[in-house]
Image 1 (cartoon, one colour):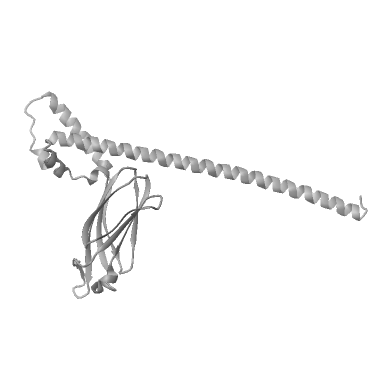
Image 2 (cartoon, rainbow, N blue to C red):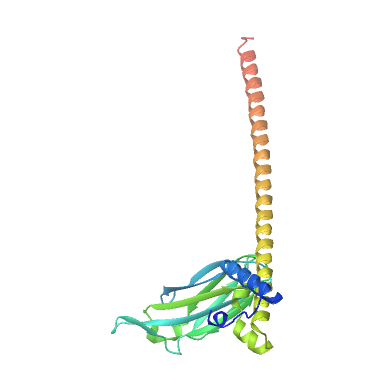
Length: 235
């Protein structure tokens, strides 16, 4: 925000309107930001898993830090380096795309290749860390999806981009991410339609089967009654 406030428009040049339009679009697309920070508690043998719906070919970055509960101070303190976290990520087909041991504070990155619900699980290496045995651990987790995982300050410094060029790049990447989200929603809608059609077809065949069973039972009952009356010489 400070960088934007330092920019002054001297005159109504042709680039001023374009700059204002780009800034307005960037602010509008910022509402589509995906990612969230949270914290949770786990025990020494407990595993926590999260479900994240991710389009295909989308980069995901997760940052975490751990705090160990201090019983004497009755508060959470930064965990020692000896405590590690194991991160495992599975795609919608239950294939492991990331399984790695990290430290007490770290960052993990993966790219999705299949659209759908990805499972992100974390658990500690408490069996190798006796000080944590029987204790409680607080994990702060921040997951960024898509272009929001990019460090644009680093990109601008590396590629020597001006403010306008950086805004344009952000805008392009956000539009690409929105397109991926739209394609993912279309894919979900197609799967839901296929599931609905398959369910309707099964219900139809089940109804036909029930009708045939009822007709067969009715015919059998009529023949059985007829043979019974004939045996009793009532007919």
